[in-house]
Amino acid sequence: MAACMSENGSERKLEFFLKVPFPSEREATIALQSLSPDPEPRKGGITKNLDLSGQTLSVRWTADEARILRVSVSSFLDHLSLVMETMDAFGPPVSQ
Amino acid sequence: MTVVIGFEGSANKIGVGIIRDGEVLSNPRRTYITPPGQGFLPGETAKHHRSVILTVLQEALDEAGLKAADIDCVAYTKGPGMGAPLVTVAIVARTVAQLWGKPLLGVNHCVGHIEMGRLITNAQNPTVLYVSGGNTQVIAYSEHRYRIFGETIDIAVGNCLDRFARVIKISNDPSPGYNIEQMAKKGTKYIELPYTVKGMDVSFSGILSYIEDAAHKLLSTGQCMPEDLCFSLQETLFAMLVEITERAMAHCGSQEVLIVGGVGCNLRLQEMMGVMCKERSARLFATDERFCIDNGAMIAQAGWEMFRSGHVTELSDSWITQRYRTDEVEVTWRD
Image 1: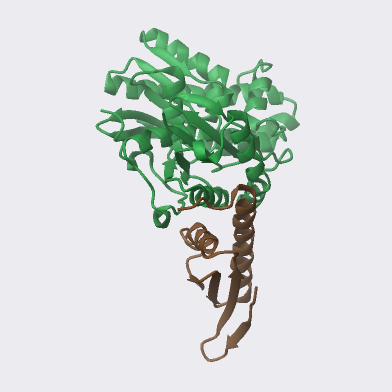
Image 2: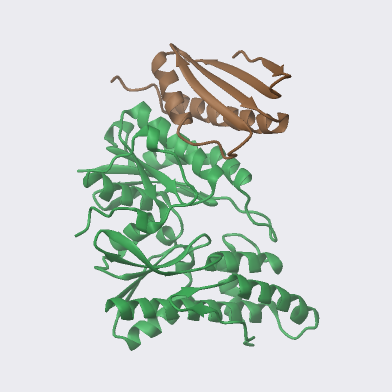
């Protein structure tokens, strides 16, 4: 898991990147589809984009304020770990 | 043969249930109970559900004696309810649906209660009173929709009861409503409270403000006991519910009443509704606490009906929603 944060002074936006490796592309896809449907609870001040690249799920946030960013990232990590625990307990995925 | 697993967690109960062609194979549930004087907040409720959901899921499979391969469809509560807990449960449902290669079905929580009530009681075409901590609606089926004939214009009746329980610090174990019911049995003095029926609808927030205020005044001066307040509140709230149910029955020419939702467990409410039904030569149907209180099997049952009539929820459409009207669902499984 790699993350970096940069501040773009002229746009006054905070950014956060997350890269989550999975054992297989199938599992990364499952995680993506479990975590993407629900909208962010907070309508303004934050954007979150999920993307898939092979076995890696990547997430990119932009936010106006640090506390909004922190809440969203924290919440996402909770949900991500729930997906992983579920996959551990009830996986592996059946063959398609 | 169709086997559906249902996930429910829109309020403080988290349940997973499995239904096979009208038979409840398992229905384990956990309740997040807060200390007296406190209600349950979304973040903490979600945390509670998250900590037990996988255990409850395993219990549901074990009790039913089934493996993932035996399941035909994964149903979950799409809404209405509290956001954070709904998301937690939906995430697990989506994940297992994909792991097991099964279709997903987003269910309306209110429709879940109705379908479970119909299954357990075999009521044919009742006027439904749906009363819980989060909802208060009078519903009748007509032309592929569960139509709302009357409802609360502010808070749910269960919410009024729960918040009153906090004022007088009644225990939330097993539920505040249950404890109010037990205390009400010992009440001897009737305290007059506002009675706020508005045509087909009801209002409870004014009664709540009034009784919160009255409780402080009357209890501190020893003019009444908490039991008397519990008794008076129940009598007032339930009489209002009976009135709007009767009004809907008169409109529909209905001879059956079905009470669903957590407040439906209350025996005094059932008794008062029974008196009205007897006067109209109508039949009253109610279920016990296994099924009136939020549970996974009711979601499985609604899911079973929906699945068999061809509904499926695409993953991209499986977002949860805090607001979801009962009449938004197209009831394709009934004539």
